[in-house]
Image (cartoon, rainbow, N blue to C red; front, side):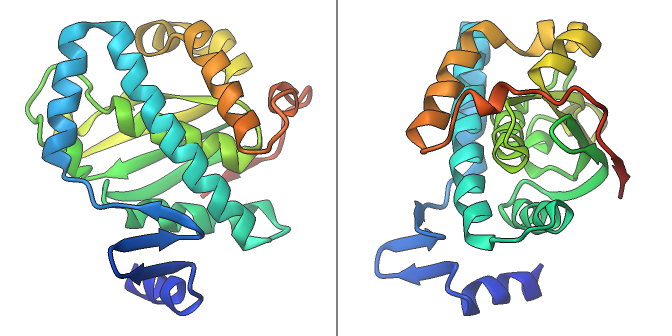
Amino acid sequence: MYGFLTKLLLSKKLKFTDGEIIFVGENLTLFPLKTMKMMTEDAEKKGKRAIQQLYFYGWHFGYTFTLAYKKSLKLKNFEDTYKSIMDVAAMIGYGDYKTFEFRRQMYSKYENIKNPFALLFYPSEKKHCHFIRGANAGGGAALHAILMNGIELKCASQNGKGCVFMNVNNKILKEEFPKETKEQLDLEWLRPKQLELIKECGEDPKAYERYPKKTTKRVVM
């Protein structure tokens, strides 16, 4: 990670100036996980709609952050772009990432190892990574250039080890993960907000809903 961080600094993709942290032209800030824990607990007390709003805040962060970095890379190979973006994800502070497999514009499955945010809740009977799940999915949408959302299969808040997430395009979510989608997502509420953000960022919202008709190549990491 330190070598990768050095590359970002030397290439000036990441800059620290007086009062600012700038990553590929986007202003960032440091944010305590204990504060996010309080935000998460407040959302959970208010119910599913508040959880969806917290998830969307994460999706907004992941999409805008990843889109800016993706455009700065100018890599033609999707696999190289994927690996570089996952290196950045591991640097943010939500634990290291290990990808199990992915299919371009369809899904990706990965582990968030020793997620320090989820461990703040350990031991718990529930999954609590609403914001991080959203950030992962927003990043996945920007990377794959397809409308994706995220489900959490395992959580470090329950097992004390790591979280297992999937970013999945909406078509596959409805067809293959109806139980997880119903429990964790409100796609009808999220979709217009996500498409509006995509448009605001200069991307074509219609292109993000052109789901691949054929199965794309499965890549196992």
